Image (cartoon, rainbow, N blue to C red; front, top):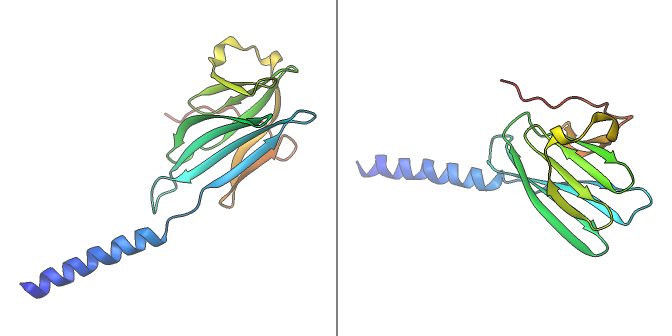
Length: 152
């Protein structure tokens, strides 16, 4: 009986040790707005030691200030975020489940309803996405625009 308990505890210890060893570091993807002092960063951190699930945080760095917003988590297959230019003073980030507007002059971030924006107001710039497990920003000529519609 004691031997079975020790084996069980050893197995649990091995699983805990393996889980601790598989923790990955946060990944960062960045887009620097041309001719502006603003950097858009999306950081993703693993939420699970074995599954490809990520917590994501949006950071806007402008003139020494940093604004942050926690994004909807990527629980598998929903990581891509399209980036659009809104005239001279704004950017729009559109994911599968949320839309954010960045005010370029202030670096502020606000939640937006995508229905309020006409497609002709938006110029596709690129996307935050991954390839071969590499999280980064892709310009529009590297990764064409794709409508982000959740699978039902």
